[in-house]
Image 1 (cartoon, rainbow, N blue to C red):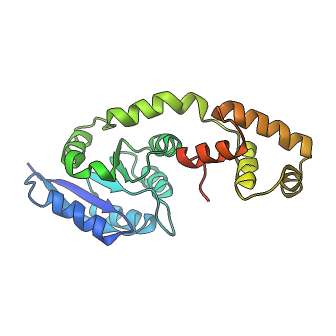
Image 2: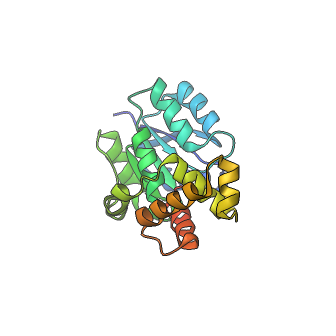
Image 3: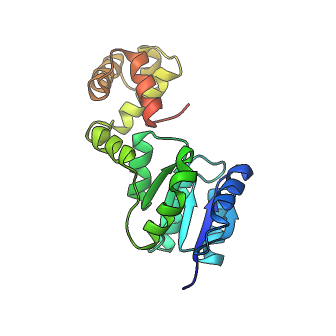
Length: 206
């Protein structure tokens, strides 16, 4: 049997080296290419046609999420595992909706990486139980509207309701209405708490 061909994508060379180090003694797994951003990932995928791709989410130029979307559009059968430090449930859901079939935290790589690659290569998903629990706990609640996310971003930047309204061309009363909805959806105590929850869950970043 041919080894499982792996493409690893991360903007940190040391992380890529670490992944290669974990996998180099596995006779049935071969790292055939590396990429440092999402744009390179698509080029390397086209050239090497890997069986499994390990994809970081937070990268310069082209993000991991955008790269997943691009790869899946061109190669619908691609098997992509997200490898990230970030456990925010919204990021998880976005990545899975884009086509990823696995999700690993970098802190668990040494323990779970080889099993994840082999599992995904057989056509199954690989989502650790703690990640699955996070999705199950929050997915019904995370769906802030695009306008609510815009309002909360402005709040996170320190703007008062009146300033938010002026920036988004809506009334101050409408801003207040959006904030009431945001607090309810996020089960937040106040504006600061809402921003903290949104950042922790990956709804947006600043």
